[in-house]
Amino acid sequence: MAITTLCFDFGNTRLKCAVFEDDRLQELLVLDDDHDATIQQLVDKYRPTRSILSSVIKHNPGMETILATHTRFHKLDHHSKLPVTTPVGRPREIGADRLALVVAAAVQFPGKNNLVIGLGTAITYNFVNKQKEFIGGNISPGMEMRFKALHGFTAKLPLVEKDWNFPLFGYDTQSNILSGVILGMAKEIDGMIEAYMDKYNNFNVVLTGGDAPYFVYLLKNKIFADPNLIYRGLNTICEYNDLHDQ
Image (cartoon, helix red, strand yellow):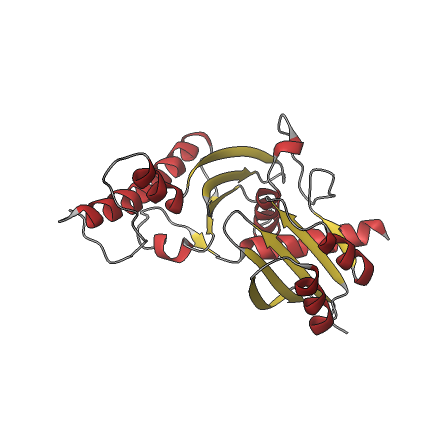
């Protein structure tokens, strides 16, 4: 019988939950809230065997009690057992979402160096080598943060919504901002990839996050794109800890 796992990813922008049957992603949900009733409804509907929470926000602590009562629950943090090592200066400061990304890449592309680029509220660059060591990486502002910064730190620039139909040369304020932010991000990502290439000659580049499919066509470097990579990592970590705790 297939094992159902609920993988919760609580980021700065949205609360999401992926439903897995064994290693197959069946459904992806965006939650309105993390109230007890919402979590209990999910448990009642899917009857999961396991669950895992990756959260970078202050979430409702009651959800952990519900999940621990009805499932084999794991909260992802620096104490979690991982199929990768984290030889960085302060493991407790590594975001749970970044741990899930490097685990997914290491499992999906074994025996290879991997640079995982997450496009979320922030852009994270995460390098895991062929020995499954998470070396570290970089963090820079994400797309929405750049739009909000231009609006918030100037007197007259408007708050622009992302739109993938924009010219190279902007013809008004909005198109100037769109082109500057999105193409600027693409050039930054290409530049970071090349900087890593100067140190590591051969590695995979894996692009993930909600905006990943759009940047595939803007980058000159060869990449793998998987918008759902974080959920695959969470499912792997949940299974790994479940097996090691038995």
